[in-house]
Image (cartoon, rainbow, N blue to C red; front, side, top):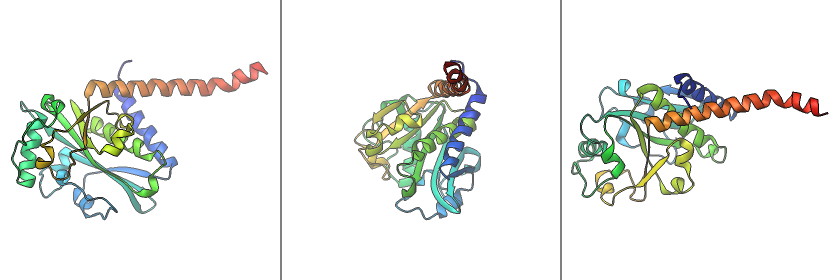
Length: 238
């Protein structure tokens, strides 16, 4: 399957249309002050996208706002981390030292995959859905939309995030587009208080994500062809 950037735009359009059918309108935003001013029931945002701690957020980060009518029912965000010659693990360790005053490198390996990541890495996090979205299938579509936004905006080498055990145990990471999962090292929580030691690292590389988009486009073309053929087939049979 050949990757076509236009298929990525179509992927985003289909997810937005599916969400619109659920009564949910989503938009991409850059005003992170507004994000951190929101009152989100049951959700405390991490400092990973806070304009108090990061410069140039408008250039290197985006967040998604989902509304039903005038009510915000969903948020999530993505941010580009350019590691250079260092690893993503090292880059995050340094960020956490600045944010939390912790040692810049927690004892033990954070995750083998983070140590291997270099270049343009996008952190995808602070995904929150209002209780009214539970059981609607919106969550997985929104998560996949966030990964697609990272691809569209930054063309990264890697996209990664952290997922709580209850969601990871249900395979939610796979439905978002993350085909790799790895447990965190035992020393990770000492470096980042907003994470739990039971959390999982979820991640995917550029080529894997492009294959996902190409496969989705192919399946959509098959569905469209089947839909067009079905009436004539039935008519001929009768």
